Length: 340
Image (tube, rainbow, N blue to C red; front, side, top):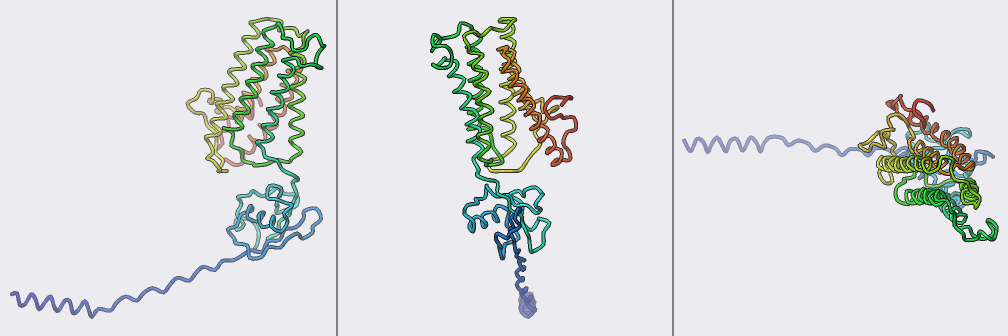
């Protein structure tokens, strides 16, 4: 029996060795890359500024801007706006060449956005100015009021409270700019710093002049009016901070992916159920509280102008949300629930 088993095993091994081996698969041919030819044309003069040959299809608009910058050092990427049509919108830096509605020969129209400055620099300039200007009036530096009032102090406690609230507001904004806000656009035109700073600085001087004036009259309803306004101011400041934290948590560092903001466990964020831009809603509430607290006409005027500007910004963001997200909540209003 052992002899028969050995013979059968040997026969099986011979059959296995005589079986034909599978042929190796031929190596896959490398996919052919179709390169693009990119032409950059001045949108105003229609002059051809640059012709880029053999641009990879996976290149982004930012990559093309970098190549254009090498040939034209005066136009750094942040200063460039590339468009498919002279009257169209600027393309996003993250747009990929092969996903755009162009052929292998693509033409982009170039717009010079002018000198640029970092958003953070503008925001900080907007806040440092009002903070320092208001304090100059509060301490009544010389050449502001009559000489006999130089470095004097107001006898009304609401004046000191208003200074603390005003300073708190702008210190909060400075800290948020430095540590909380994640700005999707890195730069803005340099001219904006003069426009924005003029707005904030001039209004701060106008408000501070009257609130800290030696002849300033306290609110009509006295302490009750001031205390109620203070509660409104502080409530809205905390609400605004809570919204800014929520918006920050929506984005990862360096990411430009947009998401729909939703209410969190923080009660101050529940207003997201009704409003697209509650940070503006709380900002408006803060200045309304400050207006009631000081009972000062320049503050009321600043609040009205700010409300108009924030309404324009909120409508724009609300419109963009609805365009980008099909499932965006229909119940939300831009800035005021059920009204505006």
